[in-house]
Length: 77
Image (cartoon, rainbow, N blue to C red; front, side, top):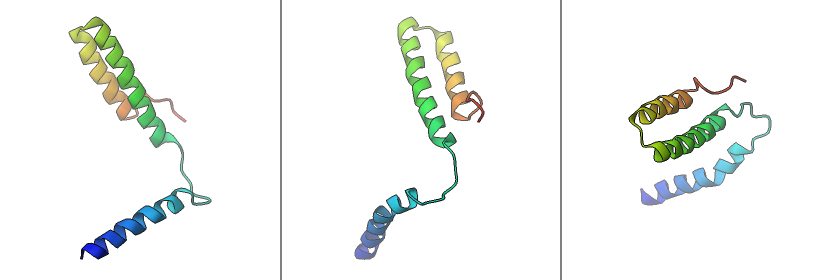
């Protein structure tokens, strides 16, 4: 059983690049852009919070992060 699981994991790792490089695969960059903007927003809000140490900044920062994570504050396109 261990050999079978190891073989399946190995095949999954070997075939993953083939799936990623598939010609003609549709899709956009919305998912990776959402992750990127979420991380950038988190870093910027942490910097503002670290500077001012204010409770209101913490609350607004949490609301903004949630808005970015769910795509409400991202540019449409």
